Length: 178
Ligand SMILES: Cc1cc2nc3c(=O)[nH]c(=O)nc-3n(C[C@H](O)[C@H](O)[C@H](O)COP(=O)(O)O)c2cc1C
Image (cartoon, rainbow, N blue to C red; front, side, top):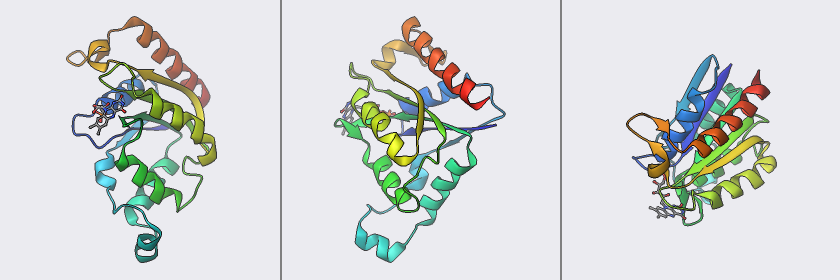
């Protein structure tokens, strides 16, 4: 059983990566794979660039990572109410390989931010649109005020309500893949 967990963020500090990995570590699977979308940076998608570049190797590698996984955990950073440009660009290129980007994989979608909103706007967008890209969203959770609710030193969620919600979400994904 292979789980792919990553952050839809190219910020070097990466609180969404911490959250994705934290959730993944609670799932008893054979192997946890991850990726850094820094490694998948490409020119901004346009029809003209697609004519020049075809299907870039980085987009094919990202698509293959999803193919190789039995389930996905993605934690979304929010920039101005929506996806980070880095993730959206990677997604656009990948959708040209196959619009069924998520390949029917069961997914847990998360989001967090330092503020009160918890990146809930981008999470709502991601959850709503996932079925159009063959994404099977089993559960989702936004964690606001990350630095108040998560202890970085202990790598532990300290807000008991969010810990319970995350644990329930993780259970739903675990049940789906076992
Ligand atoms: C250009 C920009 C726009 C942002 N817009 C939002 C926003 O709309 N909502 C939000 O919750 N946080 C916003 N933030 C703050 C991010 O949530 C914060 O940078 C967070 O650390 C990003 O997650 P990451 O560390 O996983 O990359 C924004 C940050 C930047 C730099």
